[in-house]
Length: 167
Image 1 (spheres, rainbow, N blue to C red):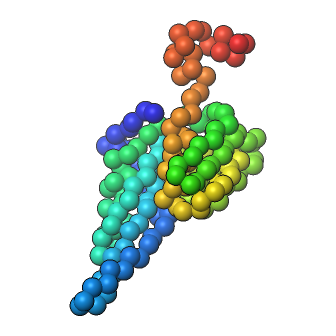
Image 2 (spheres, rainbow, N blue to C red; image 1 turned 60 degrees about the vertical axis):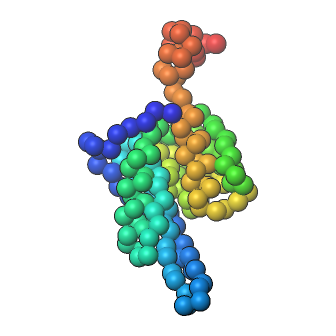
C-alpha cells in the first residue's frame, strides 16, 4: 500500500452515507450525524474518511479532512484494475475483476463510489455479505490497496518484466 500526500492533488469528494444518531437523556433527545466520505482525483489516488458532528455539513467537512489523511495510490491499467481481487472486512465481502473497454463500472452503492473516485472506468464488482457502507468501503479500499501491477511485481521479485509475464 503506497500512501500519498494530498498537498498538490485536486481531489473530488463523494458522500457515501449519512447516519443520524440519537442520544436519549433525561433532558430529551440529542441528535448527531456521522458521514462516510470518499475522495479521489479520478487518476489512481483515493481515500476514505469518517466525520461526526452535530450538523450534517460539519460531519461531511470532517469526513473530507479525514479522507485526505488516508490517501493511497491504486494501479490502473487501461482504465481497469490489473487483476481480480477479493477481500473481506468484518461482514462485508467484495470481489472485483478487470473488464474490457466500454463495460463501465458494474458495482453497487459504496463500492461504486470508491471505484469511481479512484478513476477506474471499467470493472466488474460484486459486494457480498453485509451491505453496511462503512464496511463495504473499507473492504473495497483494502482490496484496491493490495493490487499490484506487473512493474511492482517485477521490482518486488527482483526479476525482469518479461519473466513476470512468461512465468
